[in-house]
Amino acid sequence: MIHARGLTRHFRVKGETVEAVRGIDIDVAEGELVAFLGPNGAGKSTSLRMLTTLLPPTAGTATVAGCDIRTDPPGARRRIGYIGQGRGAGDAFRVRDELLFQGRFHGMRRAEARRRADELLAALELDGVAKRVASTLSGGQRRRLDIALGLMHRPELLFLDEPSTGLDPHSRANLWQHILRLREEYGTTIFLTTHYLDEADTMAERVMIIDHGRVIADDTPERLKADLAGDLITVTVGKGEAARAAEIAARIPTAHEITTARQASEASGPSAAPQDGPDEGADTVTFRVKNGPAVLPELVRALDAAGLWTVATEIRRPTLDDVFLALTGRSLRESDRTQEGA
Amino acid sequence: MTATTATAVATRGLAGRAGNLLRDVLLVFAREISPELRVPIGLVLGMLQPLIFLVLFGPLLGGMPGVGDSHWQWFVPGILVMIGLFGSGAAGYSVIVEAGGGSLERMLVTPVSRAAMLIGRTLKEGLTLLVQGVLITLVMAPFGLRIHPAGVAAGLALLVATGIGIGSLSFALALAAKRTPSVFWAVQQFAQFPLLLSSGVLLPVEAGPSWLAAVSRVNPVTYVVEAERALFAGDLTAPEVAYGTLAAAAIAAVGLALGIRGMRRASL
Image 1 (spheres, rainbow over the protein chains, first blue to last red):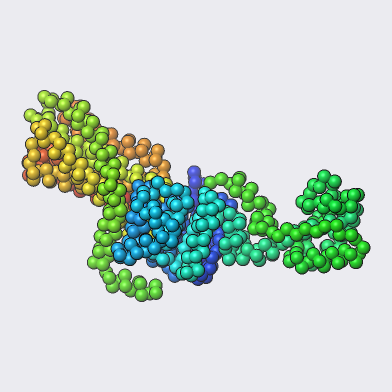
Image 2: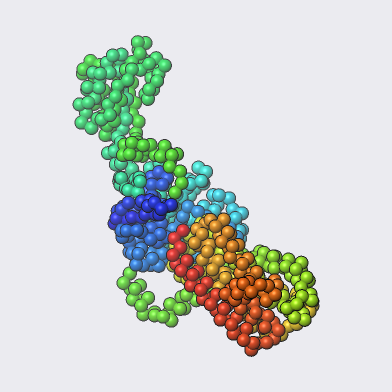
């Protein structure tokens, strides 16, 4: 559905060339739901604008829904839906009128556009505001109207740029309900950008992580987390036994980032200190490993065999932020705060 | 699927393409005009400044040398051109608003022809200007503006052509200004006042120094103003009408060319 090779975009800003997107390859099959995840300024929106024919690429090629974005932009525009970051409806226009014109812009006949508009107004719970002017709608209503506008012509491929930014949790959940239902009913291929970790994690089947204009990872969220971050296991052992426990942990093939710590009585450090632990205090061993839930019982048995007393264990499943941290050495949340704009 | 579409486009040919363009132009026009039909803000706003000049400045022209025996006959055609300069000249602001909000971007990803996106918008400016021209003409009739129907009709047609050109230039400017209203307004104001003052809309330029008269001669709006005055006087065959028609056609052609180019290249 999407095939891009070496897609590149440079901008001239005050006499300097900014390489917003540096040669990315994208392959999305029919029916997939793919999220483009990265900090602000990573090149997500610029990539999306090239794929949706809004911005000509500096170099590289791409076909979307079978149409070359360079040689056949009108063909691509006919087949794709695009829901941008902004408000799709003009402030002074009535909700239903905007939907009708959008349908007509896509070549639908008047009666067909009317039927489709009413269908979408009902599906997105906008029928009560159909005759209102767009500027009078609430934030959630406007976002739903944007979705309706993008769906008027039943596109086979839908692009969403930061679909839930600025929405409250309720509106976000509601929006996703609509997107997922659409997918179930029509098998629409969906490609979206987001900087919400949990959104990419729970909604997307595949996540492409982009940073500084390059795709640095591309896989299912589960595999990304397992391969690139792994589960974080913390084992609390008796005082002074951390070094020996770490040795044993190091024998696990996929164990890495092994650290030991003295558990102070104030319970500092990442692991939760058991309240009913030995009075003398305890040491902890922390490491990352693949498939933590299966590894942990093995480790406990090995510690037992070595005569070490396991006081407590903890497994923390990785997040996509751990993946980003493993890949770039930065946290996605921090990157968002330091790289404002674009 | 792609191959069949390509052949379909090829066989449909020029007539089909023109038909599609016309359909798109009408659609864009219909969308643009729809809020105006409910609340005619653009209609009123565009007339505000020219009306102030008509009420507070026009009466001062009575008995002024160079304006003829009826100063309204001299002043009203110029004021109509002023509406074109001010009203249509400000039209681009709507594109800045739409680009900032996101609705322009949304429409740029539909298959609607980019040329139609521009032409449809300028037609709305043309129609607004026509209604404003008719209103001003009718309002001024009781105050001594003689109505020569054929001349008025031709004068309004000339006005609409000029307005379409200036409106297109304004859209081109707005697209080049990329969502920055301050840049748009600075350039727009910088262009509009010299064009207005040197065209002799407010006072006869011939009374001024020769350098100003020379500036006036290279301002295309001057020729439109002179043609409007001849047409409103009922003189359809005056040489000024021919020059004015040429000037209006040139403004429209250059404006549309730049506007369409701007919309085609619009990448926001």
